[in-house]
Amino acid sequence: MQVKGKGLLKGLGITLKRFFKPKVTVQYPEQRLPLPDRFYGKPEFYYDKCIACNMCVNACPNKVIKLETEAVDKKKVVTRYDFDQQYCLFCGLCQEACPKDAIKFSKDFELTQYNRPDIKIKFVKPEQVEQRKEEIRKAAAEKAAAEAAKAAQEAALKPETADKEGT
Image (cartoon, rainbow, N blue to C red):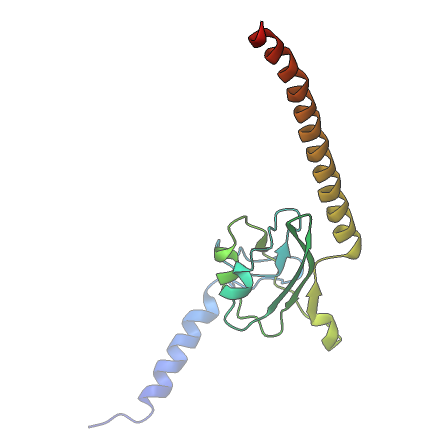
């Protein structure tokens, strides 16, 4: 013999149990649940750490990252680093591929934008590029001056040693 409404009674029993248990509602904007350690939120790019190796671009399965470089005194300078987060999988492969930890993901998950073009993140500013180029040029000039001074010092020492050997 089958009892009709067995599923209904089972469902009402679950509802009554839950009704008398304490509530676990979180008032979202004021309170936030803790995020897991491996959570991938908004990307962060550290321009000073980047060596323009292109490994993050090659690791991205959706080709979300656009990287442009320029050679200054035999060194690469990142001139553009764009991140199109509307197509990002937030898989973290770019972060894992980066040898210098120049790209990381923060715990910020509120990534909404009102305008579609604002979704693309442009990490590199022209001022940063010009500053980096100037630093490289200055370091190259200092290195050349140091090498010239060393060569002049060695040239000055050679005649003295040649005179001593001749006597």
